[in-house]
Amino acid sequence: MKIDIVSVFPEYFDVLNLSLFGKAQAKGLIEVHAHNLRDWTHDVHHSVDDTPVGGGAGMVMKPAVWAECLDELLGLEPADATPDAAVDTATDTAAGKPVLIFPNPSAPLFTQRDATELSHADHLLFGCGRYEGYDARIPAYYRAQGVNVREYSIGDYVLNGGEVATSVMLEAITRLIPGFMGNPESIVEESYTGEGALLEHRQYTKPAQWRGLNVPDVLLSGDHGKVDRFRRDEALTRTNDIRPDLIEQLGCKALDKADRKT
Ligand code: ADE
Image 1 (cartoon, rainbow, N blue to C red):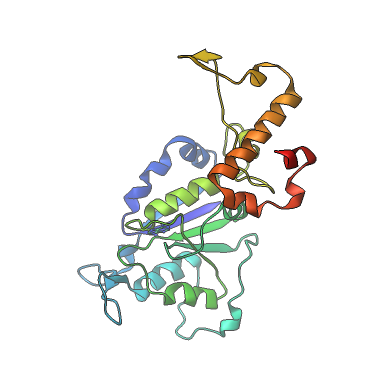
Image 2 (cartoon, protein in one colour):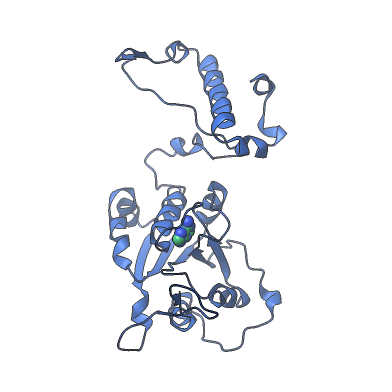
């Protein structure tokens, strides 16, 4: 998977050379390039923002500089006129097609489902906004060019820019690429994974007794059926207590007979 990131602070992404990310790059599973948006400016101040039309506080990122950068990274010819809005349909992660992603606190929430889908893409391009955000015509223009454009929020809070949100999404996506994780089985069992997404049961390791606190007896029983049932019940009750919204989204098919008693 090729990953381009555009930011006015590309140094944020130096950490991607570390840990599993660094190993995945060395193995050739992913190829990451962090670009400085200011490299596409032409003025002495390398300015990337301007005041908001209609008034208001802060600055908005200008479309022209983003367009020069994105045209180049997407391999598109600069075009003045946008085609019909009817072209606004590219949402598939078809092989070879780039997906252009803008982190945005006012966008739909990024979920495990999105991470799974995007882990199959060949090329992701993240555009990190700063200040009050980016001119709304930037994603609109590329959608109209037939580019698969996504805007995502990573949570109901406001960050100073898209860099941290990009790191979060990147980690969620890339760890799902086959070969990225040392132990791929750990992904299958995790919270938010699969059809009936539940919070994961709690985990314990040895010793069985520690500072007066015991590991639940059933986990020491060696009875795999009972262990599975205990963990499943705990996942259901914890999800119900902590994230009742996830329980509401569970389809009937995601529940077995014993679950219904829980
Ligand atoms: N930029 C600023 N805050 C953000 C958020 N919560 N999600 C995505 N991008 C952001």
